[in-house]
Length: 271
View 1 (cartoon, rainbow, N blue to C red):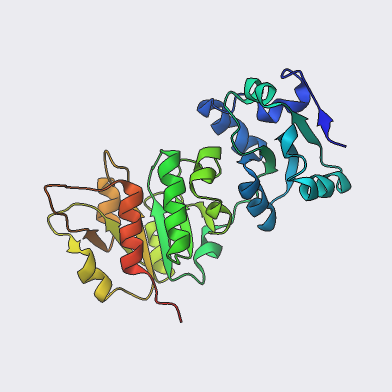
View 2 (tube, rainbow, N blue to C red):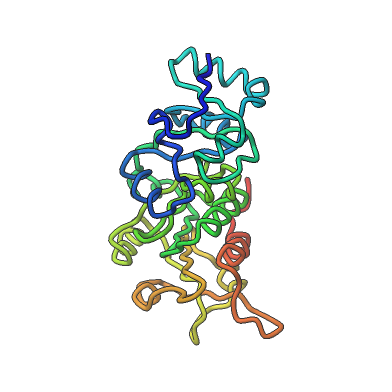
């Protein structure tokens, strides 16, 4: 049976405490092997991807809609906590709009060499620290058929709650991993047959349409932060610098929008 609680200080609920504290989650989730999935749709997508739940937390009125999930959890001995919305909000620090949360075991990281072995299109995020942008990039990459996403050591966590939500759960379907040391690992990608294209403003940049028209068989596209862009070391290591032509006096796009445009131009036609 679901475990109803009224005390937000119950230690059994520690996985769900202070979810809005970004610094705490960055430490607790990766080192503790957990991430938080929010909403019925996201939780179901995580489960379909084979991720293992540690516990569930849901508003009382959602027990009926999630009856099958509750039954499966009980059969596996996974606790299901339930409470009214105001109690959950006092615990988590935010209003739960979509009924349920799950503390999920973080899957084991996949080596980069394995991620790119059969890939033809890979996107790399260099030091993108905004979780909303990371989630939006994953959604575009999934829609446009890229094979994997690689993130540099200082990039935001794709399994942070906001990134998962913005991605609509596509972080569970697009293979991803951390690439390091960066940018020296460009040489490893090149050894796997990839041409590395840096999306940036540069005097010697190639127009995206021109590059896409004769794109190599395997491309690793690198995106940087909106403020600083890609590092000079990354630009120097890349095989080509590619730019999106702009009009109206605009010199750049949001990184997620730029990634979507470039991913569309470089997509591999479906067979």
